[in-house]
Length: 361
Ligand SMILES: Cc1cc2nc3c(=O)[nH]c(=O)nc-3n(C[C@H](O)[C@H](O)[C@H](O)COP(=O)(O)OP(=O)(O)OC[C@H]3O[C@@H](n4cnc5c(N)ncnc54)[C@H](O)[C@@H]3O)c2cc1C
Image 1 (tube, rainbow, N blue to C red):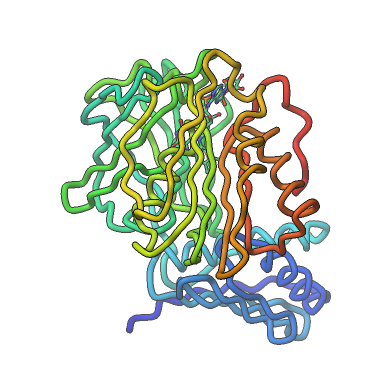
Image 2: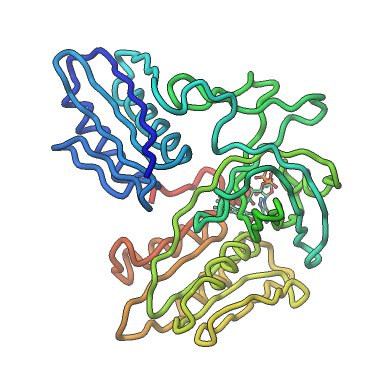
């Protein structure tokens, strides 16, 4: 197996302290599987790569080894970011040498072109994008960061690889806005992916772009990212319209023997979509029927009314508005006492009235 490698060294007398601090931070990072401060060994999940931090006399050496360009770039990014942050007072100048240096385009970036636009339901618009070399997006990491250049910019400008492994963004007036979306369907062989956009009442940059997009429109994309769900005997999935693509991807991949319930909040029966799911998972739609999205307790109440099985492994997942995510984090963690790793409640968007109340959890 080919192994791509890169190295960077910074002068410092505090190498050991930085190794410990970076490992502690990496234990919480999305892509990291393990980080051992004694050995300085950092393992990315899914065999993406191995990083090593070594405190030597008067310097800190970083090494990244990975089987793919994607793994190598994630490692370089994570190591540089955390080292630069923990050593901020020393203003370290991280410069990688080795594989992947001198690239013109970020391995995670694609410029995509709209192929088709179709309305799936009154509030969901499916945009089919095409781009080159989409193989890396055929993954259990289903999310991407869409990049929208400022309106009126004749030639879009995208982030480029920096010598420290972190992206260098265009100046503020030409910098693309970013929004996170889910790949609803990906077919790398046909160079196509579908993204479903919720067309909400107060349009933002992303939904406004989706409203105007037509064949030939350009958008940037970074990814993929996101954690896959582990296999369990029973699952509780819950989300609003923004999480339907993620729930659909999870449901269609669950082992056929999985049991559980998927609760989906939507405006009304016209928003119902056909979703593939194991026979033992009940898909239940909850209709707001005029109640404001993000300002009701329909989904949270339904989730809290679900009875969990007494035996077997179980897992709960939620993607919804910030207040619902916050409520269910508190419920699963504090009221039900579920340990970490048995639940995940992700804030997918924030209602203007709930902005500023984000919880740290
Ligand atoms: C991991 C992840 C995956 C996601 N996947 C998807 C996806 O596949 N499809 C999708 O549509 N969204 C998805 N989202 C949610 C999406 O990123 C947000 O809704 C985003 O705020 C939309 O950006 P915008 O520019 O349209 O609106 P913003 O500029 O963010 O907001 C403008 C206004 O619209 C309101 N608003 C934003 N979203 C909604 C909404 N859904 N309903 C009602 N009001 C809203 C805001 O409160 C604000 O007042 C995902 C989010 C995450 C974190």
